Image (cartoon, rainbow, N blue to C red):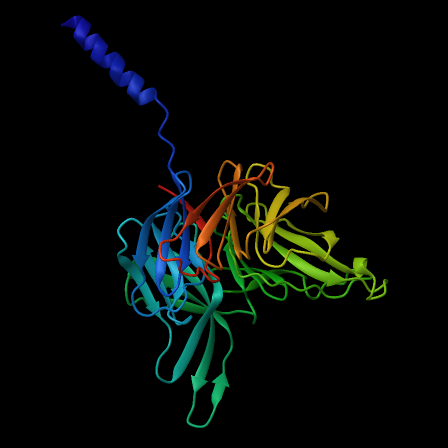
Length: 362
């Protein structure tokens, strides 16, 4: 009996000391007209397709809750945000913005607070009057995620126009907003604490830069990145080296912002993602997949892709980069060599359009 008890105690101790099984990594994307797609990245297969209720056309920005259980999606012609339980497909949150006399659009930018309690949505409102449309000030509407279906804003905050991306600092103390410039905002009041000049930079011999990015895919490295485009004043416009492409990075832990050119403008246009294991390494996608050393400011490698992709993300171990958006497949590539490792097709081949490509773990 004593031997059995000792054996049982030893087994219990070994079980307690064993490392916890790592959570599995999934990709989340959208597909027209109203689908939310969950992909097992390692198995290279779609595991769930959920319908987003209440109208569609094209899911847009997708923001996962901090625990990875819920995805908040801009939907319904930019008029609504729907929160979908990624395991069951149940709609657990819904905010509809417009009324008969007030048209309100969610213009891409959205994020959830690190504690998961509040959802921040950039909105562009227009008052519909009998003989005219009255454009109102842009704002950020804040919702309690616990309010569920039928949620209304608990507060609104004035915000600069043209905000395309919202991103919380890791500690939740700052809400970053990317527009013509990059603003550090107080998430309680909306006050702009700091402005990092982008369009309004005063860089010698350079024209104002431009950014075209609505893909908030920064969860793995906690670093937001986006390409920017500019031109040199001190070179003739016919000189190929006059047009320059660079990479803007924002470390969401430290708040450090950097902007550095890496090539004459060539192939990079839209979204990018930072390697969580090598934070100076950035990947960007469009008709080609590019690997960039953002610290040194140089292109490392580039390959052609079978078609255009808008969105990009990366595995937590930094070994695989995923390209999606646009059509109905997600490509998997090696971050080391850019060799294609696999691909996932969405059943029925629906377009992903401009939907975000996000990662979650369960």
